[in-house]
Image (tube, rainbow, N blue to C red; front, side, top):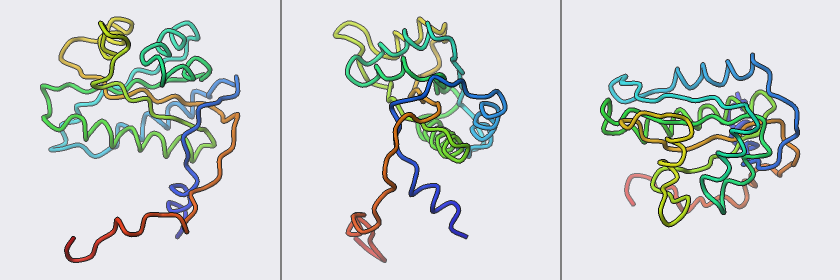
Length: 175
């Protein structure tokens, strides 16, 4: 009864990973969950690029100089993008698929961290999206929402403390 609650309570952003590769079966489960994610009008605008090559992980880690360096130490990245011509709520659909992948990864004993890409800059002349688009040969009608860094955790984090939750953010009947 508390399985999902405990999964949500213990899932934390992990930025340090062991060098151990993620097994193909686990990658398959993570991507299958993404393909089952709800999407507006079942448009399924998302696409996922699985990256495991260390050289490419290193290059991707440069997409946001102050927020993505840790990706170079991850054994796996999943780049989440969506066809903006298929849905006007592509960002929501891609975000739902992303969190479902993060929860599945956690359930499999893996850690993950969301690196936001959309509307972010690599440097003053290059957007993070344009940089990644060039690296991974992504067609122009696709917008890149984020990258998920995934791997076996090399750090432990405490579960969310229920005593510190912002219960004042929950309203009943009206604001």
